[in-house]
Image (cartoon, rainbow, N blue to C red; front, side, top):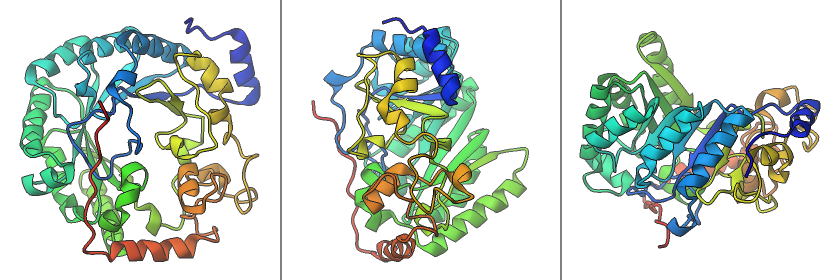
Length: 377
C-alpha cells in the first residue's frame, strides 16, 4: 500500500483546517505480564494472532512519517512481548521518527536494552505501580515485578537512556507519591508523569477500589506543586489531576483528531485510546486504507473535530477552545451520549451527581481489585 499522501488529501486537510498529527501511539500488542486494575486497554483484548505483522508496522511507521508524525510511542500491553521490538525500533528510526518505549520493564534484559540503543531508541518511559515490593506487586498482579523493574531501571540509567517515570496514583497508593518523586531523581529520570487514575478501560470496573478521596486529590495537587518549585531545573513534573473531583475537564486529546492518533494491535486506527467505548464510531484499519486517508477522511476522526457537534452549554461556552467540551469517552461513559458535556464540568447538569458518586466510590473501603485479564490465545 502506497503511504505517500495524495495532493488532494493535503489540499483537503488544509482547506478544512485539519493539521497533521504530531504523535502516534502504536499499541504493538495487548499481551502483558502485568495485570494492572487501571489498565487503559479495552476490556476485549486483541489476540496474538490478530496483531499486525512486522512488515505491516514498518509500513505504518513510514506512512506516519509521511503524514507528518514526529513522535512514535511504542506501547501495549507490554511492547517487550514482541520479539521483533528491536526490528521495529530500527524501522521507525529509518523513517525519521523519534521513538519512545512505554514499558513495565518486564521482558527487557540488559542485552536487549543495549540492542535497542544500537537500533536508535530515543527515550524510555517506565511505569511504576508502587514504591515498594508489597504495593507494586499487588497492584501489578505480578510477583517479583518490582524487583525486576528496579534492575531494569538501573540498566536504563547505566546505558544513558533519557527516562520518564510514569506513576499512576489512586486511593491505595497516593500516600507513596512523595517517595515516587524521590525515586525518579534516584533513577536519573528527567521527567515524572504523575497521573491520578483516569477511569477508562479496566479502571471503570475498579472505581470503588481506586477512586481517591477529594482530600487525597487535593493533597496530590499540593505535593506536585511543591515539588515543581523545589525541583525546578532537576526534574520536570507532568500532572494529570483527579477528573471526578475537578470542576473543569481536561482538554480531550488537545482537540479530537488534531494532534495524535492511536493504532491498535490489530491495525484499527483510533482518535484516542478509549474511543472504542463509543459504540456509534466506526474505525478504519491500516490493512485496508492508508494512514493519511484515515486521518483526513475517517468517519471516527471527523465525528468530533471542530465544534459543530457540540451541544449546549458547550456550544456557547467561552472555554470550548480550551477544553473542547471535555472527554468524549467520559461523556459516553457517564452521560450515555458522547456529544454531551463531560459531566466533570461544573456546567454539566450531571456534575453534582458525579461528585456525589465519586465520594461514594471513595468511601468503599471493602472493595477488592479486579485485575486486568489477558488476551485469549
